Length: 322
Image (cartoon, rainbow, N blue to C red; front, side):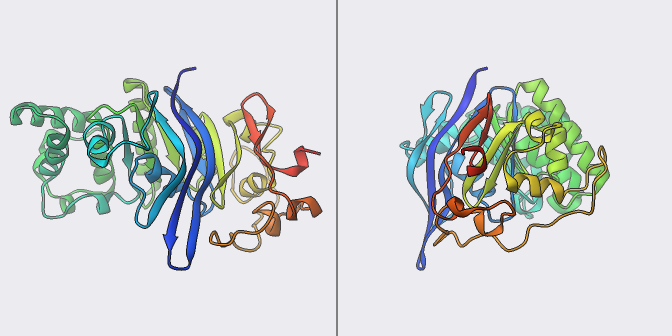
């Protein structure tokens, strides 16, 4: 399969007055053309920080300390902000941010906001630009009249569709979706997921789908990447994570045991005791060790590397490296 995005040893820390918060700490993975990579983990594990880092816009005081982001064969880390804005962001890689209402300016119409984004990247007559915007609004199931409405005149699902259309109309090859169904009711969630599946096939898109919902990832993702405390602890195909053998890492196992699943009978739902570590001063050894139910002495001394258990299945746990 063709790799469209490759991340190599990426480090992005938040440089605070109390020290460096290791939000993204030596992460490597790739994304293939036409696939959906699911990104899961607890709040604060670095999922959204990774998404914004891939877009070359980590929120202040975020700073890259190392690594590469190779998009379509080109490392985008050294590029200037001007080149990123003009040629990379939204044209090659775009993002649907969490909370559609926060992405839309309440005093501008939908059409004006989308037109502003379009004009930043492409030069075309206004009529042609409006036709393009209308076309993509129809792709996401909205009428062209939505262009003339303000955000407060739209429902939550309609606003989410507008944000998705805005992320697609410059035809990027990679789209990052940061919890696109949050705060939507169950029926609208299903509509948005079905819409994303259709658009993925129609435009041959590659998705990075960020969510807390493992059941949702099982439905939409081809591969699952599990993050904990700024690191990847497990990466595998949908079948390797959700299949009969189940996940390999104790953290993924406990996440799955805390999720009600309709297709299997479960015992009482479990929870993970304790809290995630302080990323300014993470613990020595495995970062999950203080909360792990399978911990042993080596876990507190050495950090486990991410190794291959079988083709396409990676895990960072000493249980599998005896």
